Length: 375
Ligand SMILES: Cc1cc2nc3c(=O)[nH]c(=O)nc-3n(C[C@H](O)[C@H](O)[C@H](O)COP(=O)(O)O)c2cc1C
Image (cartoon, rainbow, N blue to C red; front, side, top):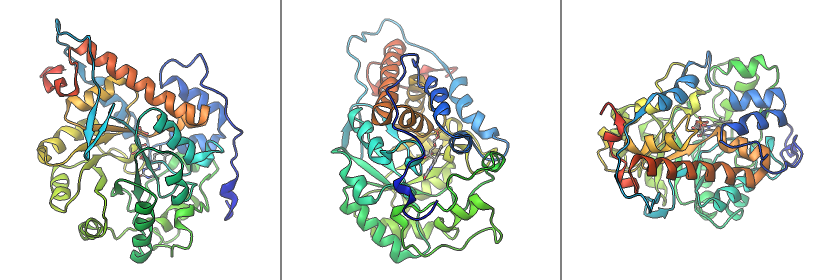
C-alpha cells in the first residue's frame, strides 16, 4: 500500500446485518464472503499450526457450568466498574489493525458501533485513522493501544496526541516484540498489510528490523515494533503517561505481579488472539493464575476466543473484570459497519444477561467460582 492509499478501502460499503445471522459466530461466514482471500487469512489466522487458536475458543467451551436454582432473577444487572467508570456491560472491543481493509468508514465506524452498544473501544496504533480522527469519531470512552516505537521521543508525542484526543487509558501491547510465524498469510499469497502506513506512525523512524532478511509481512510489521521493550519501558511509560497504563499480553502470574509493581493500572490477559507464539496456553487457562497473583490490586481484562455470552460469564466467574473481543468486532465491521459492531456487542450482551439469569447470578458480583463445575 502506498502512502495515502489508506484513504481507499478495497471493500464497498456494507449492508445491514443479514437476518440469517443469529449468533456472533454466524457473522464470520458473511464477513468471509466480503473479503479477499488474503484479507480473510489475515483476520482469521493464528500463528504457525494454529494450535493455540483452537485452544483459545475450546478452553472457554470446555468449562462446564453449574447453575444455581430458585434464585430471583427478575432483575439482571450486567454493569461493571472499570478504572472508575461504570459500564452497563463488560464487553469491550479489542485493538485490531487497519480497519479500512474491512469497511470504508474504518475505525470511526468501529468507535461509533461500540458507542451505540455502550461499550468502550480500544483503538490500535496500526489503525488506518489518525489519532485526532479517532478521538472525534464518537462521544464515548475509548482507550488507545500503544506499540512503543524505538524512537522514544516519537512515542512520547504519540502518547500526548492520544491523551489530547481523549483516550482514557493506554493499552501497552507487551506480547509482540516481533511478529510470529504467520504461515497462513504467507500461504494465501497476499500481504494485505505489506507496506502498511498507519497514519499514527507517519514519520516514525523504523525500529530495528528482525529478522535481518524479513519476509514481506515481517517487513510490514517489524518496523513498527520495538524488540528491545523491557520492564524499564513499562515503568518509563507509567511515569510518562497522565492516563492509566494496562499491559496487554500477560499470561504468567509472576509477570502480572510485576506489572502491578511497575505501576500498571490493570492487566490484560491475552495471547494476541493466538497470532504470535503457537502452543502458548489458552487465555481461559491463564486467567485464574493471573487473577490469583493480582489478588484484586488492579482490574483484570481477558481476550481470546470470546464468542458467546456464556464465554463472557465464564471469564467473569474466573475473576476477570471485563473482556475484549477481537475478530468478532472485525466481522461486524466488515458485514455492516458501525451497525455490525453494535450488533455483535449487543448480541453478546443479551446472551450474557440470559446466562446470568440461568446461572442464578443476577449481578456480576454473583458470578462466583462455584458456578463452574467441578468447583
Ligand atoms: C486482525 C487482527 C489484528 C490485530 N491487531 C492488533 C493490534 O494492532 N494491536 C494489538 O495489541 N492487538 C492486535 N490484535 C489482537 C487483539 O487485540 C486481541 O488480542 C485478539 O484478537 C483477541 O482474540 P479474538 O480475536 O479471538 O477475540 C489483532 C487481532 C486480529 C485478529
